[in-house]
Image 1 (cartoon, rainbow, N blue to C red):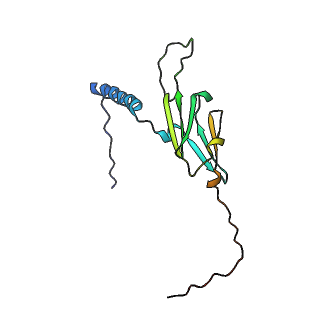
Image 2: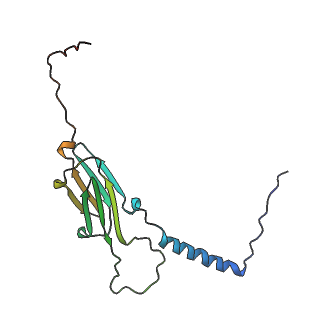
Image 3: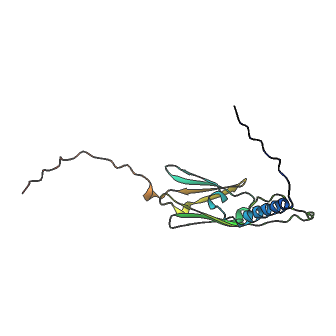
Length: 158
């Protein structure tokens, strides 16, 4: 014989509405109080080739002059500020969803080796910042030619 469990019908109480309000308030405060995850705040791709390191970083909604780049001690830092903009003539309304992030941002990337800081290029197009850092000459792999020569001398044991 198979036993089946029957669910009792849920009876609404006056406290259910209060719990709903509390759950909504908790969700709102959690959204604003949550720490910013800097790894997802600026999603990036890093590609290394033989002669350069290229960073592709998504930073939508900014102008190139709003973005700061620095390279110091083998660390590339991208920072800036995304300001909230009110559209002129916008009707006063209530936000139902507000997922876009505003305010200061920064993300630091450790460089895999020395780069030529005098030849760094940065371009910003369609919300993607592309930073190209050429590898410094002393950090590039070199091939050393092995020449034929005299055979090694034997060392006499004492």
